[in-house]
Image 1 (spheres, rainbow, N blue to C red):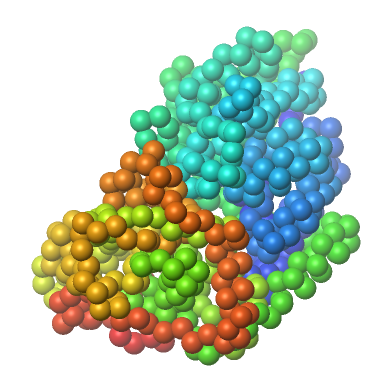
Image 2 (cartoon, rainbow, N blue to C red; image 1 turned 180 degrees about the vertical axis):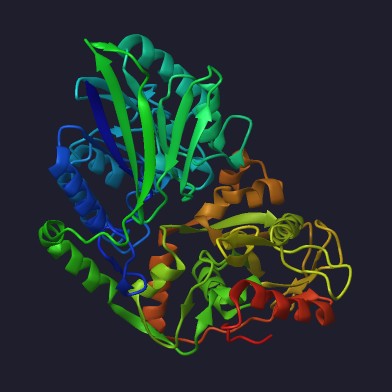
Length: 560
């Protein structure tokens, strides 16, 4: 006799609840509506053996979540997850970014346990979310154990996680595995981790992405469903006890769904063979949307569409994030101008948060701002010395460019990828690491080694720039809390000292502030500041022409 369990899992949905991309005002490739149809069909075939799990980052990313109407957004997410009848959810870092009022209410409103074993309530010393849950399916006892990346304090304003701290993933997993195996004696243990495969931010006490290490070094897991890094993956890892651990990541934005089939062979109540586990990643882009789902949530769908289509002003010239990768650009300067105006700062840091997005001249809608800023960053202003500012920029450009020794050498750090018969060229690092500065004038000498490329020539207002002077510097809160280590590894400011440097926090998100600024102005005319450049230009201009075509292709209209 065979007992079979079918696990379906989503991860990093990021508000893709409907088959419509509100940010780009077009049909979406995937959504929860298509996933709902797939789940409905699976339940129709065998409802009793189905488990439905989610791996966090449910909210934020589309106008289905907006900080200007958080409780509406929370109720929509909870209603959808209850409709879908999820069995367990792990909290994600972007769910935490909504703030206590939202995620605490979400935990109360959803009809399944929300997991996060390494999130600790400082007052009580207990887990803030459920560490694990037990589910019985087809006579099989399954423990679902949840973890979330502990790097949250490096990204988010402290008010969003007030009263909490985030424990080391390895230590937490080992502690709770001992309890689960002894106390609960499950037949299967499934990890539901909002932490990526490996790498990311590291400190002496934690690692951002630790799925691979947990799978290898902590025996007990049969399956680990993970996310956070948005990279689809399906691998079987041999742990140190010699047992196979199936690891699967369904990717992001409701484009894919993880499916795990677990079969137990039994004869007279005794297992003759171990559990047989197989898995695949389901692409839902060709799946029809659930008509019942869409009918149930039509009011939410239309409300978000009305909100996102709201006109807030006009932009009088087209801008593209592509330009930010190759020099001073109108796109980034639109953000610089906003940050400098709101904070009164001396200097601004920003980077494009999206690899390839553009705004055409014409009307600007709320949805357009989601193409620029998907998430809910605040605006910070910190005190930094001139030397720290220089070191910050050195760190930024070290992730972006390489040293040229001749006019034929490459300028950008670019990697070559082959998928099937197609070859692609991409930047080695994500573009949200390409920070530039406004308020100062500077040169980036590409003939020099990393750490010696930046020469700051003065302030944009004509004043001198001094390495020993303290300046007010604006940036988004992700960077201001230590995100990607620009302030800690780059400017060499200890993480524990960042709070002391903070002198301003915006009341609202960066996207909200940008919308209000555009509404007030009516029209905006973004343009390059011409406050910085790569040198020697006779080398870099030719390199930029070559590499822009390499990365973005010949359809790119900008000519340097």
